[in-house]
Length: 265
Length: 189
Figure 1 (cartoon, rainbow over the protein chains, first blue to last red):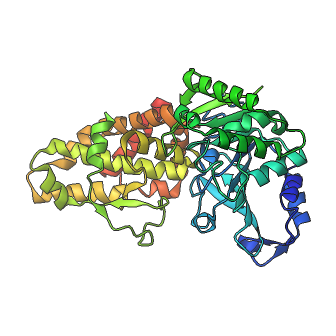
Figure 2: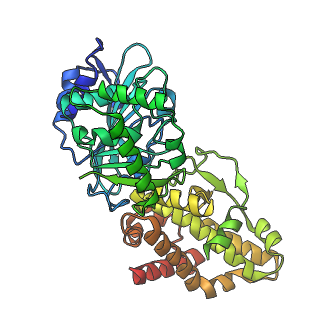
Figure 3: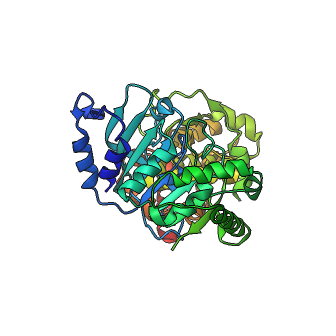
């Protein structure tokens, strides 16, 4: 499924050749090879991090060992997107020894800034591996569409920092859907958990015009989606309730965020 | 226990970062090094021998960082994050030398340069030093580790680079500490 999703996310692009990295850096690989490689990989859980920038705290912290509330022991597919160009930061290294070892990698680019970087890493000491797929200069919504059209399930959405507007839903060249509204497509995406830290104040200060725009963008993602203003109002009040309730807890990450878990069963 | 220690630990003299200058086996990523010698300690303890307890703790903490790096990589990042958030301490901030090169050489030098008897003082307290670092390990284990850190660190016995931190001379301070450390660690499991 992950391979099919990848293929789908590239439908509008003509360049199909992938470059290997490391020992395979001079080799070229077809999209078919990459698709088969990923399809043959057994997924233990998929984590999606929209507008991730270069943060990889999902890889560190989103697992049942760190968050027992998550019933997925060690997710092994991490998909990141960012509309900004983070490629140079990426190559400074996101996963460091001794914690991680790089195993293999492939890269695709469209002769511009758009790149897809696929790496497999090993978690040292645990001897398990995972794929890390980074969509550089891709709008989150392009990836959402690919998820929806291929029927790929996203078990966990990780969206700290703001989760509503800043970064996630406020990029001018994208048809923004803030992560605040992701619960409205949780059924279609198969989302089990959303890990976020949304302050109430940020929710309250959104103008109605903006909200209408988000609803419009959300409904454009897939034919199955038909969201109304009332749905959004419900999800906003539900989110505020979660913020007020004791269903939140603190998880130490680099920015000391208060992480709120929303569970969808 | 740790708050005061880390405050002082943070004030240890940092030296220019140079990962290629002979630190071949405990290159924590983006390491920060501190370095002290007998002259530095003599100047800072100002005749008060009990103040060397801090330098032992600092050396042991640095040794712990290297040990987690070598023997428990799965916990390294969590220790790094936890200590940074709780105490503002960088787990990558380590002594730029082997533990044995300090405790076996520099303490003897201090004794020669002064009327202090730091070697004898250290030997008498070696078990309590080992007990201190094992308590720190137990604390980190409870607070942030995802596998049993104590069990992982016991595997250090089989790690060549880990064992290089200690002398093989049975009379040496580092050798004595190694024995006390493993004894305390085993008892804590």
